[in-house]
Image (cartoon, rainbow, N blue to C red; front, side):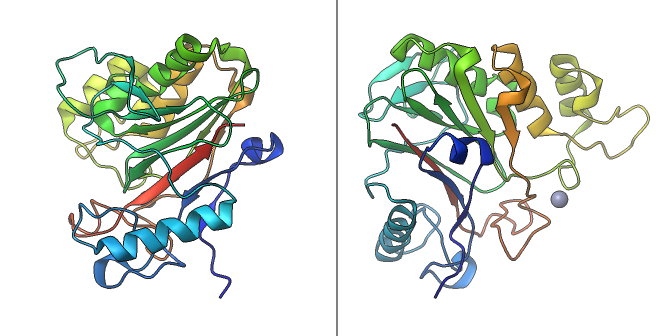
Amino acid sequence: MSERLFVTSKLLTAAGIAHGFSVRTGGVSSGPFTSLNVSVSVGDTAEAVRENTRRLAEAAGIRPDIATAHQVHGDRVVSADGREVLAATQPQETGADAVLALDPGVAAGVRVADCVPILLHDETSGTVAAVHSGWRGTRLSIAARGVRALQHAAGAEPRRILAAIGPSIGRCCYEVSAELAVMFRQLFGAEAADDPAKTPKPHLDLRFCVESALAQAGVPRERIEQVAGCTSCDIDAYFSHRRDKGRTGRHLAFIAAK
Ligand SMILES: [Zn+2]
């Protein structure tokens, strides 16, 4: 069996960073979780999720104990050992949506199924971050908070950071309410979403917003890569929370510190 387990970023690969955005093929889960699901919270068995994660880690050449967090669509940032690096800007008792790995060999990850996964690497310190950015996290510019957390915890310089924005629901498939479209146009400019005054069913471009947030945080545009793939369009490669009406698996976006 040589099924593909994950897709990668050219920028991070060129920098020698072990990382990946998992796809849905090459795992052992069945039913709606076929086959490379990495979350037990969706109803899959712990045994299958453990084996899927093991396969991913083995294929990527990293340790299987990838540090993740209980994701809550907030903007709190923690380190791989669970310590808070940046407090949430809005009341948030538990959970985190960005995880830093500060020590060589340690890996961090986030679980997604439509939300935007972002992997960051600071070339000066070797430290990395995995960030989960749905529309709520994108509104809070959580990707930029990941950059600031690396500055705070590792002395990273934004101009030395590489960023990969992974497969997620594309503008092609992401219809939103008029209220959300207006809000994101105000936050990130007219390109972020269709004008609901002209388009009755506006679509939102989360990946555009995430890239804007990273650029505003000081990451040079040429160091930001959009890794292609719409989770809703490509049913063979991806789980999609929206397309599959909630009954589906999760992908893991992971990266190891150098
Ligand atoms: Zn699409």
